[in-house]
Length: 300
Image (tube, rainbow, N blue to C red; front, side):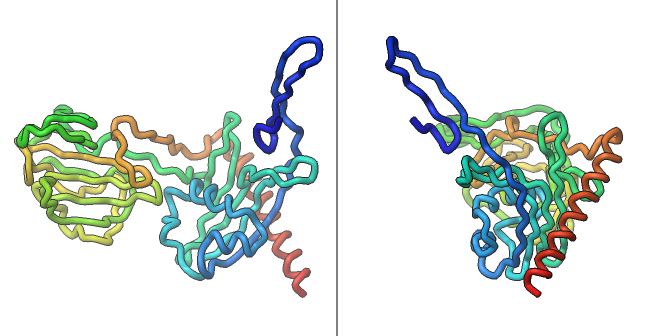
């Protein structure tokens, strides 16, 4: 009985009953595709003869550098990746080995380099493509309220969800963006949040900062901010019993506990591996060029 495209189970009824699982042998083929986006990345991949599942893998690789909800007509890609086969039947996508993605006229390179049996993606200089978030958006005295689905509000006394963390701190304490991103909202929350700032960091994470006394000078909707940049100051605006920051994190639009948010290390290539990594980059850059020349010859 097939469990998946590669896994199966065998039930034996001879003499006695027993069962075991097995895995079909697979073949991995290295492929290259390139294309230009006219309507969507999904359609561009299909037009290039590839599985649209590659769009999800690309989104994961570039989650910290490219907003895949904002890619434009004319953006283009060049990929070297793995396809998995069982007896000449395509069963899925493996890893993307190298990628060159041009977004809004800027090219972003990604090379999948294996460290400790895990592939991490780096640019041509060996910098990790994943950005590390700050542990907290301010220097605080204590956590006065944690993430909860049923908290009694200190003012209304009603029990309702509190999908954030309250950091108690003196009024005027600087509040920082925990990561690079774009301000997508700034203003007054009439539901009790007071002065607030909302930042979109990538296609996955968005953060919200509430009860601010005021905003950083020059902060406006659409402004790009850097990790550690001051965006406002602790206050008690809105429904608040004292100065604090109500900090919230959204992953794919769903509120998550900021204290449990996965914080992926963003260390660059270790010095001990830098030479071998540069050889790796040169290998794939040469392969990109060779495949591109082959395609030109085919068209000619």
